Image 1 (cartoon, rainbow, N blue to C red):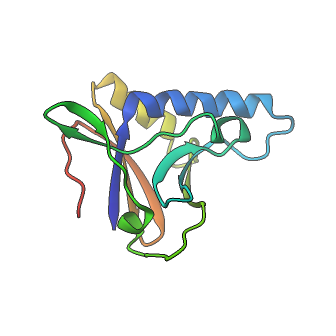
Image 2: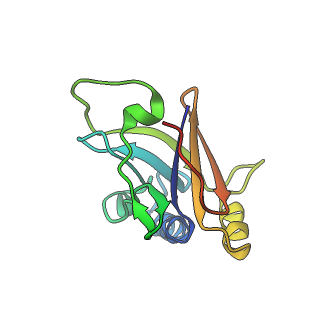
Length: 141
């Protein structure tokens, strides 16, 4: 199991961009979702599942320090527990913005309204689990 944190206000902007991108696609390829991926250097990032958001919006994990929020590279192997010698860019999982039992947009908005700072993604048994947090979390090593 691993955890990454991202700035909640940036995730809110990304989610809005995903919804706008889906409206531009005719017909929409898939419902809007956030996508947890890694690049060719195995570094984790969050983007959208639309071609309009995938290249333009790449959010990197952060941690809190005495200097404030800092970008903190997280490798895919640190999150998944699997290490590959020659990683290729890939997707770890999608987080739909709307589901019958859960509305991620509502969760993000509630976190922003409450003054929380982080969007937290836990990776457990090949499953991506989103959440919001108050702030100074520590990622497991």
